Length: 408
Image (cartoon, rainbow, N blue to C red; front, side, top):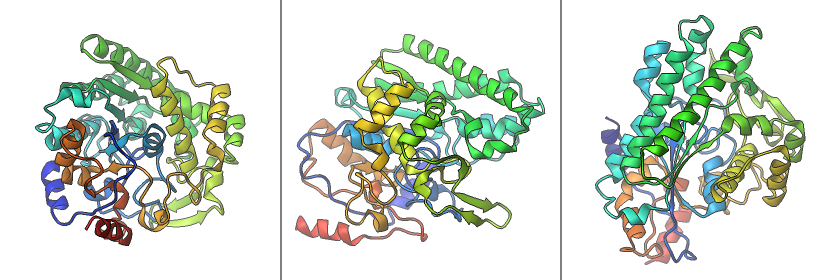
């Protein structure tokens, strides 16, 4: 179902953008599956919902999101299949929560990736340095909170179903030949503004569910590693990293002055903004769940250090050092190292990135470049940077046309 949607979508029109002329060797790929924390304008393919919040070019933030910063810091080509609103497995979450989620789950995203790239990946050596990321779980927990509070959803039911779904997605990705996997755990939801709907007396129950589930996920990852020939499967703890980011000392170092309230407050009945902040870059959250772009930059820098160092541990001290080393306090929605001259109007960034639509359109090219059978500098290719679905369709960008003409 999802594959046919993408094929129909991508055959309608393709966008062209410049690849870096400085690039002489193909970059390894950073392949991301997940939800709105990672989405780079994929949700719009599967849903017509229009948010009243002025998200930045399909990101659930006021600028680039964490995996885009990671791609920039690490010089990886980003292939992003994350979809805002996704859960680990639709069937599982619907069965315990009573929801009717139809957006592609993490498992669906891996299946979709396989349908696009699976038959093309014949040289396993070429993908040995690629990193897969499965960032999922926040929505699983949010959809399950009502059932947890009424005890209709037990810890065993939630945790085992969630962990099984995540590990299943990881195993399918490993079966494609990938050897480096990062799995994130469920964030500390009591830090996000939306958690204030949970009665104070019941909050410890929810947090106990999440903490125990994260511990079970960690154990399951160890078992997954023991059963497969991989370089690593590592747990990237959004739970711990959000807590460190919320530390007043760390938040202050990032020039964030409000860590608990959303910049934009929405009336969900009328789907309209009822209030907004003056300077969104001073806020931790753009809405009741999603971080602003500066916290995303922090997570991207942390992830880069995490990848470089197998023994990396984030502490308050190391967080402050990362903020200084990466000059994160200067990053904002208007001044950003990922921006090029027209980023604010086009959404184009100073990275090579492909979302679902453009990855499907350019899968053959991407694999050929990795295999060394195509010149990464020789052809202008479509990139997720160029997508603008905010007005209901693709927008062909003048900067891309300039780039095309330069090759004629």
